[in-house]
Image (cartoon, rainbow, N blue to C red; front, top):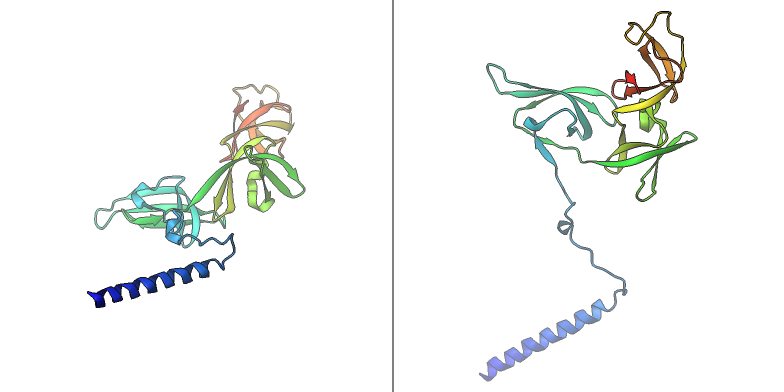
Length: 235
């Protein structure tokens, strides 16, 4: 019993000494020192997004060869012999190029982690286009190359969706329909009516040039589809 007690006392004494050393060691750290959490405690760390090729539809965002792409066309094909597959046409957000891509039916595809933020186009500052978050008043400035040919539909006060991938704006989604004013138009031919045929080109207040029916006159407001750039109707 005495030998056992001596061993126990020695162990406790060693533990107490180790604890005291640890306290002295930790006290040498600055008061604001914080041990960072391990990566696994962050719910967004190594987050993987995927979807089945069977769930692909127009507008889906996928990641192909390390680049974010939008599905602009797709077709499910089930041949008489062999496995079914999905034929797609993708638009690369980074390059603007389109590419044909085929996926095996039921296969797993990486989904592009694209964040959508609603901002209002407020004004143009030199060569930059300024978008504002109306909740935080934070501004995002984009160059003409960032906005692309969608510039011709932008009007001050227009709400747009900025698409971000890896923290970088990769595209600007405009409203499908915009109301713009005709600032220059040739006079219609004699006898033209709202039901008449034919078309002419007009210039809008954003600088865009579109084809409209002959009866549309300068000073009128019209509705335009921003996806196709086509005249829809008088506003």
